[in-house]
Image (tube, rainbow, N blue to C red; front, side, top):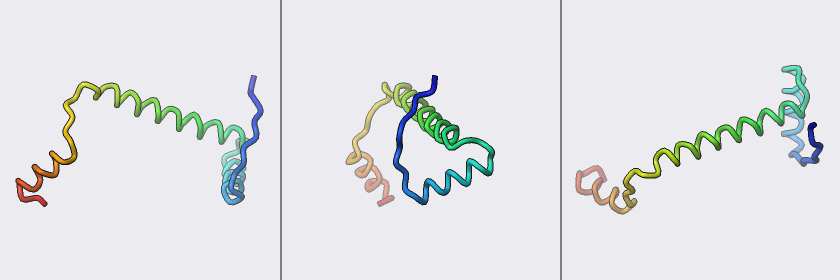
Length: 74
């Protein structure tokens, strides 16, 4: 069962999502749910990428700068 909540939007954002919802023929709730779902999917993908790269060697920023200077790129 859907949960009810109150959110406070900038008036211009509210107007924009109202217009978009009408244009694509869905409710504001559906539009907000889809935006949140999309954001959470992106987070899950990012967390997966971090986990996949957890065992890669780490180089310090200073080390990278030193190499760039040595190679004449800085």
